Length: 565
Image (tube, rainbow, N blue to C red; front, side, top):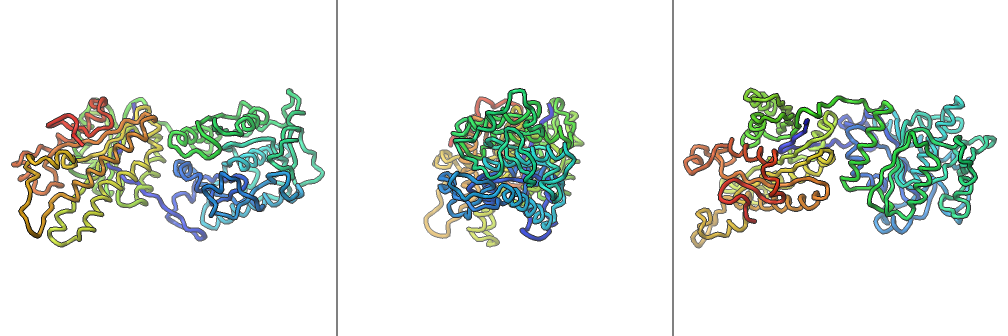
């Protein structure tokens, strides 16, 4: 089975500037999706609501957030969280008591807002084709209505909304993701002489009216098909959403069952943010995008190998790669390093020892850089549909630099925690969308035997001999030990949060090894340190299921099978 295994990986994201071309923005040439916020919010709020979804889609699409044209009052669910993020806007009239707008003017203002969003994104240097829509609540209602208007115009040979078109404002969308959208559809033609199809309402109608909300829809004959939307749609319904009945009516009364997909999640009226729910949405969206030719289908040898990511130029990371290459199982290993050339050389040297048909793919990643981590994620996600195991292998000690004066205490401790804890946490958070697509996801953190609080306080342990009274005090491993203890706690938190997602999580303490991290390797061997290859075999055993009964613990293969906290 082809699996992606990532060990000690770091990934980086490239951020674009607001109004000028940003040559480092990796999404500039990707297909674009117009994102339409709900009524009584705005584009800034919707971007925050979609933060997890956007990150998961970033390797494939560029999301552009349009701002609705009309001032609106926010709902209580908005003010509880986003009260400081006004002014609030809406695409359509929300309540019957809201100011009445001419239907033609509403359509014109919506068209202008969409054109403005496209124009401003072009100014940022984006060149991708406009291919889809994402809408939440009122934005989903509008997205479906835009697709329907587009469908009618294509049938009649027209282009654009009304008499004008701006680079695909209305005519080029091939699918839409509808989050908690309700009907009826809105007729978005500016021509006052054009008849409104049966079952639709004009753009001046309030979207929350209870008196005539479904008046038009109820008049539609069961055999009628003119009002059906046939452009592919994905409907996302929260099972605890008070408007669930209305959302189901949009799906069943207005969308062709041959071109619509339904996804349900255990949530209320909001954009899903849990990785499990977001992964479900992204998988379905990519499937639809491939069907309509927006995202090219790729052939994955998913029944032959496992794909890993490993950050390892030297030491135990490299030994883990070598151990996997000696396995009878077939793996595709993603080997990460801060310097790509060194990672490439490490990959070449390790494959020379391979006894199986496994493969190694190098990439560049720096766990101390959010940007580097995101870049790595985007590059890997563009080539691999999932990873099956993520091994956070990065580790470093800077306590010796305090003793020689080349670092202050604060510098050394901050750097140790950044590499050993924060970097691993950000890497895991970033790669989680790919990991959750695995049928048997595994997450491994490399810790240390020095991280046990119980063993650190054991007076009989030779490592814990008390120093003499007086100054100065020398704490040779304090920064390193504390950071690895923090890593253990982080592992426990990940194990709890991912338990219901089916992810198996461990920390692995390989024991004292003769690696460069420990300094003089020959001295370490004299002190009883084992060869680094032993540590690689320990991690491989966890990957291949030997310690599945010990999930959520710090595991090792010396002294005791499970390291005490």
